[in-house]
Length: 276
Ligand code: SAM
Image (cartoon, rainbow, N blue to C red; front, side, top):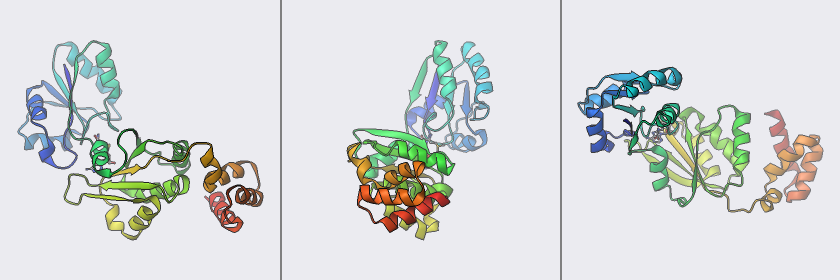
């Protein structure tokens, strides 16, 4: 038996009774960072042997864990915070364990994406979890462009030092007027959930570096434009496409004709894009 156990994302009181019971009962606990998890386990007086399973040793560690499972031992998988496998290690282990007929049991609990979505005030009937955007600027923008016409609510995880870069990229690609939410430090003392537009969020967080700290989920309203129609009215997208084929001046002039935007403004924008 392999239990996949969610732990709190900040507030210890979000640990479930079932999680405590299961973690006290298993033969071994596989944890992402054993030193970090020791604090949580000590708090709940859970004292079981631990094995470290992190992003960089998952494949090697997996064989060892599967051997334990083959011997009939019961294991639990936890991560540093929240639900294992959600932007955290464990996928390969679960896949292989299931293929070998091991019973895999979820012990549900906190997950930052779902906690953020539940209070964001954005549509929840359909949503897409995107995890972390690529760190490289080009790859990040390329991913956002693929999401330009996504109608479902988008959920991103973000590191504090990348908040402004990501908001800037979202403003450039998805547009400053798109409604979005930044959910920060959920379940902790400095919890904040700010609902605004991407442009205003960028302004607000640029002006307050102290508020960029902590753990962050960014949620973005899906587009309400129909694909095809919107290509004609999104000046950024039009400019990007034309810049791939034409000299800067010509691209700006054509983009102005297509979108109705001012030629000079588009020329400035094109200069910025080429300078990146
Ligand atoms: N497995 C975790 C879960 O279930 O949410 C996510 C792990 S991922 C490595 C860490 C990211 O989750 C952080 O960079 C942040 O984007 C988000 N996160 C975790 N705890 C959070 C919190 N208390 N408030 C806001 N975001 C949080």
